Length: 156
Length: 156
Length: 156
Length: 156
Image (tube, rainbow over all chains, first blue to last red; front, side, top):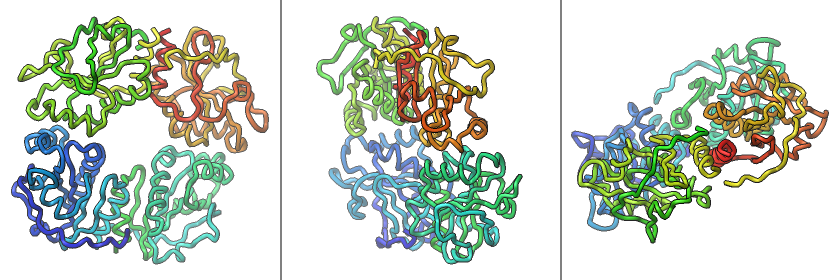
């Protein structure tokens, strides 16, 4: 863990809409900052009970040091996880960070999820100050492990 | 948090006995490694329910990267927290790291606890590769915060 | 608590649809059994993180002794909590008991919720063998308290 | 579960000392009341992290309806779990109910533990209004299950 692998540049996200942030940041504009991206679906149990609350804790405690946002990567049940439903979900669950909607393609994986090769939700991505992906956590990531990865990127 | 303060050199611990580790390390011998020290008392509720289990998680997940051990800093109820009782406690709770017994002085604070100015138990100390104390967490430390501090020290 | 109050007969529920149970029971048919009804909304955080998991534990451990089902009482954001979305939610979260959809009236409170005077979601109702409501728990109900109420009704 | 088995009369406990309650009750004096007895050892992890906190929740929420107390059944490591150590433990952990010390016999099982055939700690016993043992829970008892058993005894 101390030496985090480098999964290469994240590039720009394909986002159809941002919720909760004007103006919408580009990854280029975030260069120089450590970024945490919580890829989730609003009706994914592991996202609702683990991933999103964990990202919210990260935002609460280290929002001064890193940028945290969500990425809504709908790859199933598209009809009931549209933007209108997502807005209600984010408001009801009081999600404290902005959320980008991964550009849908009608069926199957949305554009960013496919390009980054994400295997499912939740997936937590950490991006270093150079724009490179340095951590990909699928499913349950322990808080200590998340912290160590974040600390490694902040401190380097 | 990203820039951890420097509380100065930890110096050598005054230890009357080590449990669970031959040979006993000195802080000088640990130079070059990141060290986590969980200062606790065996009959302190916050230590039993939070501090020691957290240190055990740290040891389990990052024992390759940092050195974790306990420091039994008995400052009250000395008669019932002696070494014999401590050995039973550590065995029953399956504490997975070695424990140093802070040198008692009959009454009041033991030698190391007083010299380091620890305010109570549990206190988690992180020591950097130079032997300097960089983190002092009294009471409940969040797992993410602990991880960030550890990661900062590992990565620097 | 030992003497549970009697809130009067529950009467029949107004249900537009049942999910997960053929044939749909009526309250009259359930006479003679103790019944637990978890009134919830699929995008209500307290329902998702507390109420529904608790009802699932009750079903798992005492499904032989009492009848457990859900009641989807949508009183806000009707457009995104329709039956299609609910079916996805119940499947994804592996809800282990049948769910009745409280008959909607287009806007505001659905029929059963209004008739029973439910104050919000989650609300857990316990119905005794005579069809009388004996417990109404709004928000977080402790597991022990739920168990005591259930045990009181089972044992009487 | 709804029909709780009857393990027979509890009889009188052999108690060398009571902590936290003058005057000490006898089981005969408690006839007519439902009684919960948490058999524990102060250095037993399952007791400290699960059994005693659960009994404390039971006392907090249903102390009006049932009598809760602890029974310190030391069957190992006698030298470090004596009464002096127990007093410190109970004070530090703020145990909210009285504790009876099961009469020791120097080595092995104490008198009451052996007579009742308790298999280990923690064991939660529920005694009905007639003085009969109706529930014996070894290890982790779920809160709902405990509540159902308590409710069954209260309601009958």
